[in-house]
Amino acid sequence: MSAANKVRPKDFFSNAEWDTLSARQAWRGPVLVLHAWGIIIAAFALFAVFPNPLTFLLAVMLTGGRQLGLAILMHDAAHGALHPNRAINNFLGQWLCAAPVGANLEQYRTYHLTHHKYVQQPEDPDLVLAAPFPVTKDSMRRKIIRDLTGQTFFRQRAAAFKQVSALSENDNGAAAKQAEVLSSKRAFRDHLLVNLALFLILALAGAWWLWPSVWLIGLATWFPFVTRIRNISEHACVPDSEDPLAHARTTHASWWERLFIAPYWVHYHSEHHAFMHLPCYRLPIAHKMLIDKGHGERIPQMASYLDVLHVAASA
Image (cartoon, rainbow, N blue to C red; front, side, top):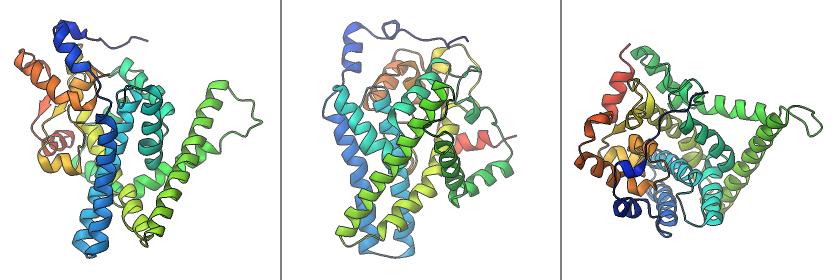
């Protein structure tokens, strides 16, 4: 196995610049988690107070976008960047970010750090997400329809259920396989617990119906859709390069794309791969500094997510 090329931060930044850039503020991560849940609560309230087809659509899109936001903040926690205290980092990342959307922080951390180590190499576990592109417009249309109609969600959940049922406690399978399945079982259990808690909280507020009508539909439709867009934008159709700044793409997201598709600076993906332990709120600063230092041409960039989709559906 050959690991991908890496950069040394101090080849780009002075000691003082890097110390400032890499500093983790204890309050920022928790505030971002509260922000994500605040938008979800606002979406619930919008539909509850003004129930009509337009507010329903808006509530589902806001909720699904912030469900992706929770996954992004879980991603920060996987890098230890959500809070400087490891216990707080892991608690926030697992119970308020990962479990609500069906993930497990430790399982994801192992998987994701392997992706970073071998990004764009044959051993990269995420290569399957980028390798098929570009595809035809018809293929892209079918993928989007599957996402927005819940087919992707139910297929993924069925696969997860099959996995958690794969080994019994007395199974003598390989230790690594058993550990993987046990992690999946914990993810499944924690997902159910947190969603039950959310349902009960809404029920106590007299609005239990918001869980299936907004939260679950957002999780089953808009969340898979924007997750696919994010996956495509990050690595699909990025030219092969040994330059560590060119292993991923940065997409310049508009305000509405940041609201519905790309929350919490996830669109600065080239900068994240180059300096993977930077907190997400430092990535725009890192991007500007790299541009100011003359490294802009090394970073694959696109002007919008629509431009990315045009390239990804150009076969």
